Length: 182
Image (spheres, rainbow, N blue to C red):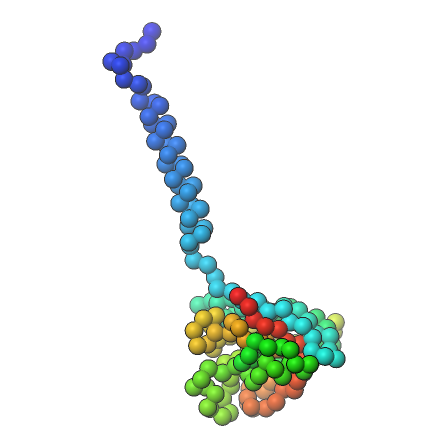
């Protein structure tokens, strides 16, 4: 026999309806968190060979708290060789030798200082016996926004390695070049 409810519905249906609404709201808010939560800033460059060279690959820039992590994966480099990886002032790799990319990136105040390492001089990379260079560098002097932003500039792989003791030394023409895009 049923208990009299006095014309009211049993409470169980109301509790189920409220629980369903709470679950739906949680799922919706969880989706919003995925959309509006913190996203890492990142940019990429497809690096293509300059005329007469075979180096190619990709370079990815991800902003971290200690700088920008520059991850590179390059093939077609001379075997067992070292090369300077550099961000260049302009996002233009149209010249046959990559010279249209301009000088090594340096924010305005740094351009005036002679004998000082430029922000765009990311460091040296090493190609193994197969001509492959893969790894990452943390670049504390560049960013993905503001005056130190590398977005819209280009990244190049130089023929020779850089020397920290002589930052103004020429590292030769670019073996490969690519525009950095977000």
